[in-house]
Image (cartoon, rainbow, N blue to C red):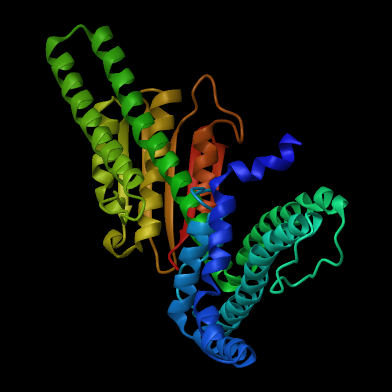
Length: 389
């Protein structure tokens, strides 16, 4: 019993009722002035033309969200579109929605008036009075047991109000919901957002991981050296690397705070000298050879190449320490080649182990390239090829 009464404790039940009443206000005014058949048929024709206006979809969508869904702002509310109609299919569905809302609203409004009148007639006839001749169902005779039937019209009205409200909400999701093209666009946008957040997580891993690795290596080397001059240089490197990592962190947090803000000022291979100097300052003996026009490499390729180089140098410092490192970056006509080699350490990560190696392969695969990581002729090698187109 309590469950049946629960909808009447919710404001959305009454706002849905109001939504149906609003659909018949102006046709009802015509009904009292002109012929009823002419008034309702003219209303249907006008609504058919109104549904072809693109802005009508916005008006009806906003009303549906406010009155049919109430204060809910979940994923279901996003299924009612408030954008203007973009295709003839959208206009057709809007027209069908307007006509359906008029028909259902007229039916509910009629029952809202006449069902309470029927209850009143049952009471009057049970007492021996005459029923109201305007009631759509005339109660015959005068019987005392009509009093027992008086709750039935009100119960029927309550059921009509709740059921019609649910039906209008379902129809709103179908007729005012996104078209297949809009659903595809929303899915693509959501996919882009997820990919962007995955990329941001990788960048944070690369940037912060590189900075922490350099700081740990420099601090350990300074403690072992016991040389004040070397310690000062190590602190300078730690400060510079930490400042660069903070800049990356601030930029990424800015992108997360403003999801529509375009990603800008991301480092590219033209900034590779900063990485090489950071690795040298950490003790690695870097032999770098960069050939070809790096400034002509497309932005996505250059940015991902920078992150791959950063992750490779970080892995060298983390797993091998201050060892000789060969870095080769070559820009050819159709591909960017990147190779990092260093002597094998005592403990070598196996193939596929470590989030850094997985990140390198994933970045390369994302751009249609390929990456090889593993032992090669006594060295540990990272070899990546990225297509320029």
